[in-house]
Length: 187
Image (spheres, helix red, strand yellow):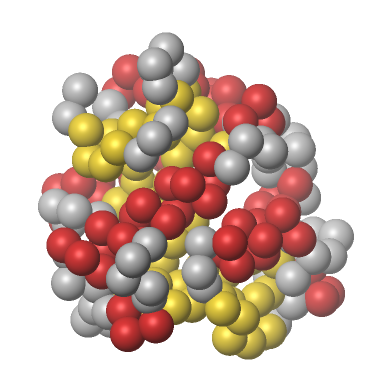
């Protein structure tokens, strides 16, 4: 297992083909998918045929950016994932997007904040990142709290034209961000 980053309670590592069942379990939970698809789940076949190959492709394109499987210490149980990746399809120099998706069993433990803060710290200290941003639905208060606890600050509310709007999308999306200059160095 190639460890990308370690925190007090989590190991973030690259995904492998062996993670397909864990990803299917994550994306197969309607509550996990609530603010992403309105609760519509992803089939295990779609995880294997589309989701996991897309995740693995990031490692070919970017050495230090992409999706990271989050496993709990010391038992190595899958908790979910984080992404720390350039904007796709057109990356902006020095800017990365932060995101996370955790199993319900990992909610409320502070893992999302812990992993996010560690990724931000690594990005600013080691990877040449100048700005980190994240977006979520305006009504996703849990994700907004994680971004705030991770040091990101509200930037704007914006509206997207979705092919299949989900409940709450009428309130828009929010962007949070922090720059390297704003990051507290003693964190």
